[in-house]
Image (cartoon, rainbow, N blue to C red; front, side, top):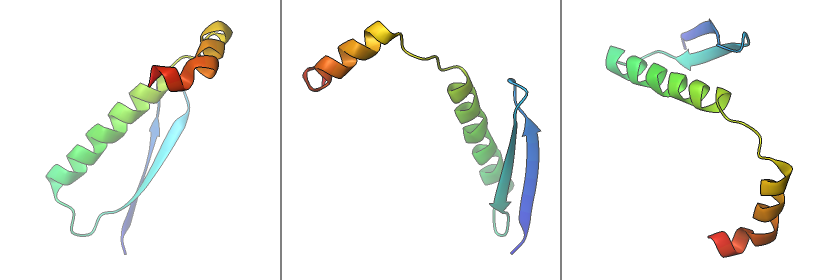
Length: 66
């Protein structure tokens, strides 16, 4: 099984290594997968921690908010 390992530098100077089985995968599927990975990386890198006050409110009222 051929594996492709690609290491990328992310905006926060960390790196990500992708290892994928590239047999029988179309170029479109590879591009789609890369798009999803890039979206996930940007989404995760842009998240911020909740303030303690908000966390307490969510803790106390979680089931009511659903």
